[in-house]
Length: 265
Image (cartoon, rainbow, N blue to C red; front, side, top):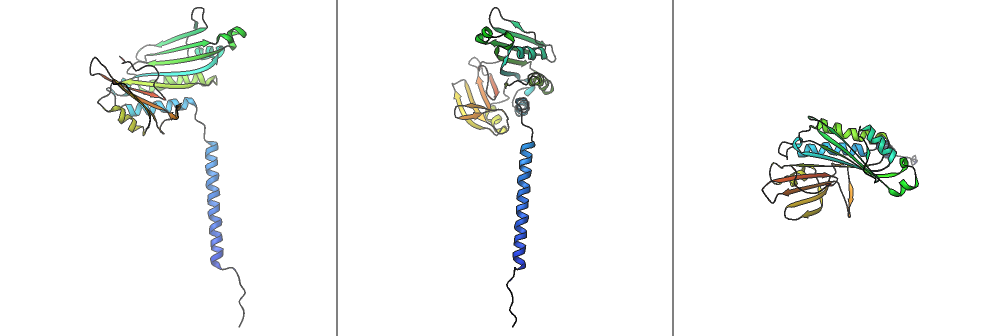
């Protein structure tokens, strides 16, 4: 009888080939993921604000009397820039900048006529210590830039005005934090809960005083975000009723509501 020498079976070779192919697939998948992550453009504050604006417009359109177009939209940008940088941004936006009395406060305003009614406002409060120890152009200022638009402004006009500010600030490579709010009359009760549902939002904080219910949320559908206590929030929704009548107001803020809860016009 002829002895049979031990050797590798066909099954063993197939298993090793299958394992090698599987490893190759994993390597390719990981490489693709790393390439996508490294090559994807980072979102800028400007991208975040415009994205969130369009999301809130879409969600609120069916919840307000007259739609999102009938609401009162207001935007705010906060930054800390030098006086020369403030002047550049104001010039880009065609806002005349004037000193307020003898203080280190500079302000300006630009208004647009109907049908594209809007008001740009800018405040720059120079740090007194910086003014005293350096030339004014290098003095650091706390800056607030506001945009208020009239009721009836369509989404294209709104995006255009917001983009104008974003472009002026980004052109000068300045850091800023953007936020906005929307106020309007809800079509019926329960608008707060329905809007939060459309955003897929998770409740984080709540406040109620009898006339106002205000809830802060986090939504994966929004790009903005701010730390509030132990949580990150990016959406605040409030419903307020008037003590004088049955009128109600829905207020939406991203990432939070700025200003007070007083009833609008």
